[in-house]
Length: 590
Image 1 (tube, rainbow, N blue to C red):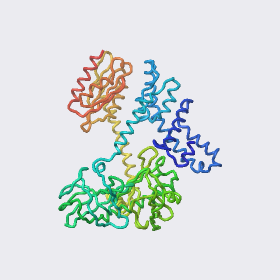
Image 2: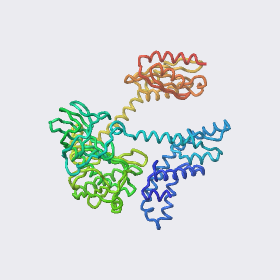
Image 3: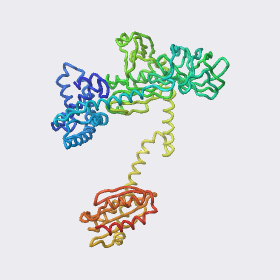
């Protein structure tokens, strides 16, 4: 079942089908633990599933490697949390037995679910062997509270919660960037106003607007609103506080604006155009990702802004650099095709029948807007787009990484933004060339040689440092004192860092035989402390306890084993006092 689900594009998640898949995987992994399979194993079973059923279901073989990768990653993630969760569950079970109780609290069950990813039925499976049940009422109460908190976080505030109009705002911005309209309402901090004056922030609602309100990942338009009197409102954002309603958010920079004013709305043409490039590029990128990575790719979020685009999608594991190059090349190939972008409204069922993609949990009505780019991309989308892919000009990937389990993110630039990014890279290469006194073309070879030389010098420094430390040993040993038939050496070595002190402490202890060594060093205004005790003296002298007290005196912290401990601090003025206290602690030890 797991193999079929993943091959069909379902990814482990905490919602819907993905949660069903996750629960199946985790329950199977848990039962594997019960029979001694503590390492990931289900991905190997998936290999057998593909071999046995691949003839009847070719998609299993076609998607075999990806299916195995998804399962392995999920097993590894669950294995990490399972061990920690089992410790909590075992402690809770032991406590119940000690108190002669048979019901696990809903609070503990919820913590296992919320923190460690234990579905309730998994917790119950584990407890069944101990004849212990779960407080379902308490668990459901906490789940309900969590859902309520999530709803509250999603609830709109301010103007969103107070605007009540018996009409909708007509959006005309697909076809034009200017429109004349009437001010229907003004809001400041959610409260209705009849007027706003110069210097005031205000939300302006008009009967119709060319401003695109933020939705579907695309940011809201910017621009201006002017009155017939010449008053000016600078619009910095456009939002949808309610369905079919657009709020123009800005500041009165000249004069005033009143409810009922006739106004001229103008969208910032450059802001809109650059946003359109990125939105159409996002559709092309989505298509190429599905082509190159597989049909399991699903949009999981996006940001379409004038300066960049960001696209989140379902996929297990990092994308190799070579594959990213292929993806970038394919997107640019589609751009160079100058493919026509056609937009039409269709019945939802008809759009889906034609292959339009509808992802990211969007809610759709009976009629939907379908954006098609050439013959390679068809999606349901309400955003603004270019007329042909060639307008995008250039696409440049900038970042790829993980943002959640099974979700990857890419960031990219288009048009002028892509050119700016490339120019920035070129400038950096030019600067590197100047620093290495060569050309950018020679940079890689020269830097590699410089790094090789640096490593050689570092090894030479380490060798010289070791020689210096070895030469210091006789002089340091001369400072040893008698300690109840053993040796005590407490001294300060300035310029030595923590690693050097550790090395010297080891050498000194070896030469002393039975004894205690305490060293203090100051390097770059940082204090390092080390204590080393021969094994035969650890019952009387505990290095960790000694260092713990000394570290507090220099404003630091640390500790360690009975035979060795180290610490750091920030107050070098106390080093001499530390050494005196060290001798006092050791000589007073019983």
